[in-house]
Length: 405
Image (cartoon, rainbow, N blue to C red; front, side):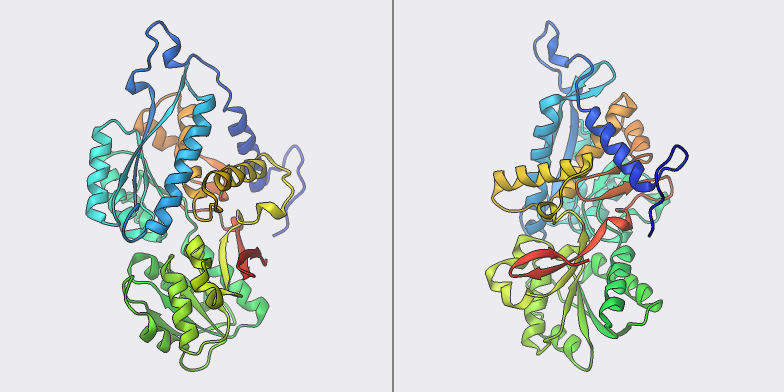
């Protein structure tokens, strides 16, 4: 899409994001008095921005939940060095983190417990099922919730999700990006291996819609069994017949497990992943042969080392990746969504001049900004996910994600 030149009367969406990023950076400077600057010498608990977090730190989803926790802690440390100006006080972020173990019932209980404990907002749910449980509870509790999960139903129907905002890309946007790739590579027939559950269902619906308007045919759709079970039978079905490639719509570790099963089933052609595959586990040694040369659609935040930063957002992205890598020894991959969630909440608090849950929700709904992962433009009619033009195509080359398009 061509970008119009900037003048006094034209402001592109990317221009809005860049301006918002600059305002975000400018807003980091303290402008008021810290709660503990007064005679008492200590901050009362109600002066903090308390963020309740329910993540998959064990069990299903732990490969994605762990990096999100690291990103939240890293970003909270960064925000707290300067503080968050809210009204005439400079406040701190306080995280209250719980492990839901991938259990939706536990996640819903966390939402209630964390809100009762004073949380002004909730973050979490890397799985669609835990995110839906958190979104349902957040609506009842009237507490803003920022979801880190994949699955379009997390924010739908909108009249039942007015307190929920999703950070990950929408399935249809990822599917359309893949359809464009198929066109460019002359991929005429593909099969789809989709995970069980809501993430996989969103993928099936999106792929069918995206390919319905393309020259690529969907030969067959096969659903994967639950995590931990053998994928061989499903892979045999997907690899059978004639196709030019196979789409795997799942999250790690299922993505790489499906790729291994496809190679064992005799599929030697290209494999295409949605963004849920981008995790360190996918590239580990046991998966290396199966995933070499595979493609993934993902927010364009994986290639910071190959880009010279020219905007505030790009500088912030590079800084986050460097700090995360230095602290944890691995690249952040999926983790920047959590950093964006915390920054969005901090910006809402600054703008609202309040930590009131209703005002935080209203200001989230009005935000247009460029985050670490990509661009967001929430409105009253759209609560997720990431802007489509934030997505890029990556290919595994010599064991690393490399920008392809």
